[in-house]
Image 1 (cartoon, rainbow over the protein chains, first blue to last red):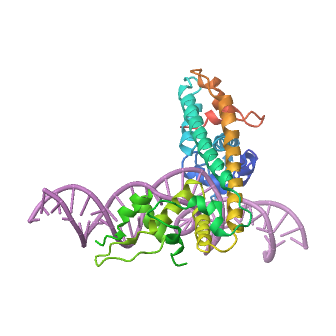
Image 2: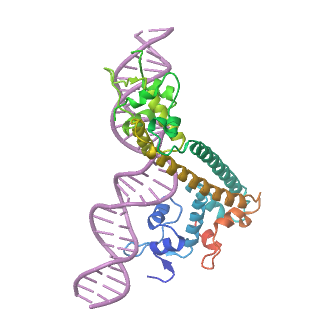
Image 3: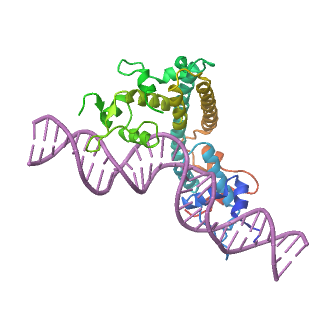
Length: 147
Length: 147
DNA sequence: GCTTGACCCTGTAGTGACTACAGGGTTCAG
DNA sequence: CTGAACCCTGTAGTCACTACAGGGTCAAGC
């Protein structure tokens, strides 16, 4: 093999990305289909490591594939203003913050009801909290369902 | 229709769950297939509202379908100790906390690099942060890929 | 030259928890 | 009797991979 190119395994190793994932990124168009050897093996120019690394960093920060596609396009036009990249980052930050708020609510509710340490089920705070105590439905209604 | 039973739409309304989702829960075995009318319509006993509500609350707290299945089974045995429900809740709380930690790291990284407000792309902190600055790969390597 | 094991290929199906049709049938009020 | 609102089944789509099945290729050691 040529010294200046990489097999898909070497590329994956270099960028910290699974081989299957590299092929997936090719399929969805995040990386170009590389030249092939006579036997059909992919041979990547070394620069692709950088692109793949960019993609991985983006994923680690929680950007979607589509957002990364947009960011890569922006990165190809270094002289244009980066207002769009800015907007993407702001929107993404807002989404992440919303998810944190969601999970924090969950955590607070969960830690309120954990833990009863071996009571019988009919006293369990968790199962109790999940159940409904309106007049029109009773615990028996749940328990009555056959197993 | 009998006054004591509910159509799937009425059930969904009563428990705050989408009709399609009710059918999905039946398919995966969270709720029993109800009796059908001559024309094939599902007719639910009123108690199912309670069970569906239990499921919805569980989902809101982030439990998976399989966890809810286990909790429902536990709820059917009110005289056994609830150590297992406890364990599920503890594990789930740990997962939620791990997710919060993950997202918080993301948020911190994101808010560090947002926002450059209209600089050109080659100065953009976001794109810069995604890029790699090791010797073996250059920004040109990314920009060189055709669009 | 042959074997062995590590690597590579394609294509498909699975994950979780729904959601969104397509293409029909039923019910009921006006 | 008509039309809207509801119901049915079954399939495919979502997202970002991951896991095969069932092959082919390559390089090193004997």
